[in-house]
Image (cartoon, rainbow, N blue to C red; front, top):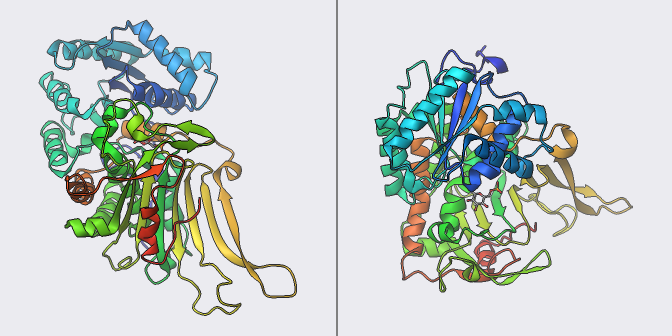
Length: 516
Ligand code: BG6
């Protein structure tokens, strides 16, 4: 019989002696960009919630680094306010906070200045002495990508990056966007790997930290009844939607550079495609799972000519409209957005995965800002019945819907007999909802990811080759759509599901988007 490890025996690929689900070793988390939005909204609230759940290591500290001038106490106070506003659990528990705050430090300085790193080093050594953080370091780059090279060089020059074989760990968490096309992602990977070993690099995609995204693996591989039908013989099409009612939320400068393809598709949405389409990994360790994701990315047909892009990709940009009853401006009226901007805020793409399992099953993906509501889901549409026994057009094909957010859960749509004398079918739903089934509230994505990074478990982080494979797909599209010959994005009124051309993309295949 094959050996199946018990849950608590899952080996940690980075540190063989450490179990993946064990408590992390004592460590200090250094947040570069500590005065920024991410630290306030996500990182420090996530760390605090790990403290609430007693998941932090016994000895723990945080060092914030940025240009703003704070004292340790001012920074801790600022973080307390952020946790008060953005934490999943509220109000703040004063006892837990007191203990948590006792390990908060701050270093002000420019990333260009070696002295900043000398002071950071001294601060970390102080934490090692007073909080027993044992020289283990998790560096979190919550900064714009242009700073990554400087941070890596300075850390290296200050002797603050240990070898991956050192008993004291050094790990680097890198936020997206990881490059802006394939050449820049490759260059960044080269630079990162000149300084660190791949086993020390944690490229974050917060969608992988979402419970429902992880549940895709459990749903597919801990149940025996779905896998036999999860292929081209039974599946007609897959629709993946990642829609947001929000606009660009004051991030005009960033968004003008990014657009929806870099902001959502290259990372989050392609990850959803990978987890929906991958083959069963040989085991649940980081590399086995990531090896299977890579195969999906490599099998996705790329669009190499403008004609292929025009046939399979629809871009949109929101115009003024109304969302949830409130009037909202169009993208071009947003702050720091150029008049006449050609940046897409919506995209719909028809993908084909050239593999034995999927070839010929279209994966329609769409993502957009200022949609009518926030809704992210994966809908697997099965083939219709071969013969309409109860009359032409009386039954709808089965659809399995994984709701990533909100109302996290899974629903199966199937036909049932309407009570009465006749055989009249109607589509009904079997619905599993996280909220009602599990009493415990789900942790935030960043909680899970920070904890895994502290434990050294890379399963939910993207590997070098994975990032590059995703850029190969998106980069080819960008090359065409960013040329001046490609038509500008279609405008769509804010509060709608994108331009009519996105419906036409499916209509060509005699299909329609699922109504959300
Ligand atoms: C971020 C994007 O990565 O993901 C944002 O930069 C987007 O533009 C966000 O709004 C969506 O994340 P979530 O968790 O709210 O679906």
